[in-house]
Image (cartoon, rainbow over all chains, first blue to last red; front, side):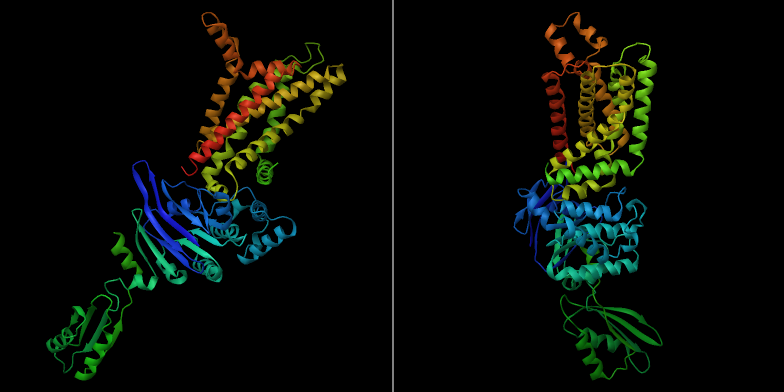
Length: 311
Length: 245
């Protein structure tokens, strides 16, 4: 379990991270969202013990990162932003170096290195200098060193940044495979990723924690969540009476006319918060015997929630 | 030796040899130490079977060559971002500092050991006092260690290797110059004898010259070792204080 307690960091007069607290349990994949410069990386640097907090601390499986840094760091696998490694080493030398630092030796060391190379598909570049690797391979090397010791806590700063769609998919399925037995914290600004892998999301803006919820619950905060678009053919129907019956629905917040022309009418109906209106609309349509051309329910988009919260 | 110091040490030492740095350094070091002792030091003309002209130029050789070795130690880690990886691994910052320092020192020792043809030459041409020569090598190695400790600490302050190099050269130069008549004469006229001796005592030159004459004085050993300890301690503090800047 990772417990972040009142974490703060000032750089001069600038507050990069302002009193952030949260807990992550085993089995959770926590997405760290926020605009660039919001304090995501700074928070991760403090949780992993790279940067000393101005106040607060992080407790990694019971070890305080400030008072017991070595024990805490042993529990963590960390992929820093940009997946830094030593460019003058080959992939296998680098991973062996990491394995030695992580206290593996002899056959256990080679076993760990081999299995992690297989796990993130690095066989083809095993003996290549890290300097000469493509961005995707470098990222995988970073991922390999982070999971080599099978850490209880895996922290990744933008694990899929700069990868192509196939590579992103691979990394995400790797994360999903490991999710059950670990605490995983990852930062991203790709919102589709949150959907794909995260069981919970935290939004940070200007150093402050402004939302902490499941991706679905966050989406429900979008103004157009559960909004209904209704399109009817114009023949034999009266636009004014249709509008009137729709306005009569209890949970409707707003009715927007998208189109009313000679051929068809189209309306967007926004529900009140946390309400679903599609059932009532279809009931009315049934009662009034409207011919319906199209009826669709919108899902809230994380993008919109994100913008709403952070702009 | 602590396990993680050893692991860092091996990585750093291999790092020198996996890039051209090691070979360029060794070739230039051997070439320059030859040029200095044979031409400037008048190795043959003196008609003496010793390595005095060889050792005399070591402080000046180290002044430029050691900062070139030490500049990358931390500045490169900062530049590449690997410092974040290194310092989030379960090791003490002091282990990383020591491992890196010892690797560079060991590398310098290798380069110094490769000057053995000089030693063979004097033994072939005459019968030198080999204990003086041994003392010269010891003094040279200790002085190199002090230079490296200074260079490593300064390298930790910046992510720019050029800045690390220049500042290291200047600081090392101060440590060399404080023993030269040029500087000492400036003080001898008016300053109390104690002050002059104090300034002299900071100098690499005076301590190194003592040892390379064959006098292994405890004070000289203490001087070089305490200088190393001091700068390495400062290095650890710099790393702890501004890890992420």
